Image (tube, rainbow, N blue to C red; front, side, top):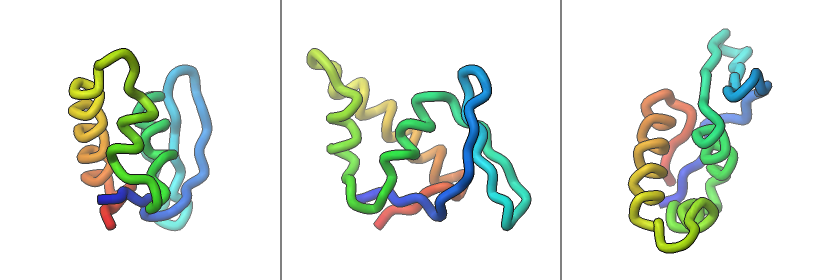
Length: 84
């Protein structure tokens, strides 16, 4: 499965959070920094395991994979990504 952004959104950083703006639908979404970095990887070409590789260090792959999966589910629930 490869997650892909539903659409490219304008964003800005405010302190430790990121605000995504969907001007077409007049909606905003607030993401923490890790969720934002995961969202950036959702290009439709990068699979979940590759995203996990980006964030994994020193044998913490299972913990990171679970966290990434939860983030991806949340992004999907917000209709920010879809799976291809």
